[in-house]
Image (cartoon, rainbow, N blue to C red; front, side, top):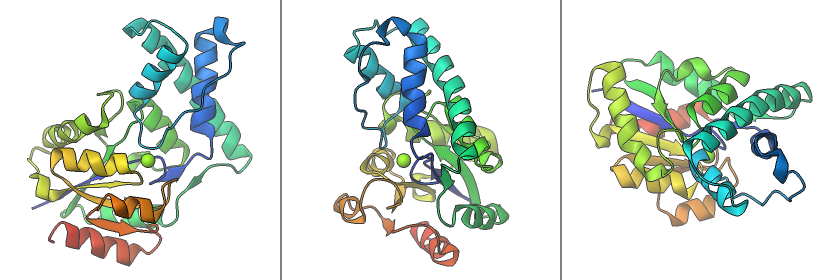
Length: 237
Ligand SMILES: [Mg+2]
């Protein structure tokens, strides 16, 4: 039976080195220029969904939270994100995390065993812009996104349903593995009954991740053989 691997993006596959945060700020002030004299608040982005970030921003700036404002903000954010990533990459800022290209290539080769997908707080467009910038987009034909639900814990069932539609087969949660870098990734795997492999390549330390008892825990994914072996053992392959 095939297994479903659900990858987080920021801190797991890539580190935009601030381009994401700068784009949220830029996108916000482009959308609401009348607020441009105000200070942009500190954001806790680790594991957050873009939907929860925008809810926080609208509350902070006392902007009415409705679909039209959200669509306006996301359009400007995504435009800023594409620009900032180009700018950052031209300055050699932003990177694919250690071992990721090798690991994805190895897992994709084993298409009889693994289906690769995304489980991320990014909007789908934002996720695509980020992954395209780093040449990783083609590995992930589908996923569950921050644009599907503002609560990350609701994204697991959405990912499982998308997988069923995209591949024509169902995945029991024992055959689904979330791979992510924060406690929120661990919580979202628990919420849908999936296994979880935590990696300390984001802003959360290995010790802090360990306290949330993920099924597997690695410093990074740089050792392809070790990572594949752990993935196999977590999925009983
Ligand atoms: Mg992350």
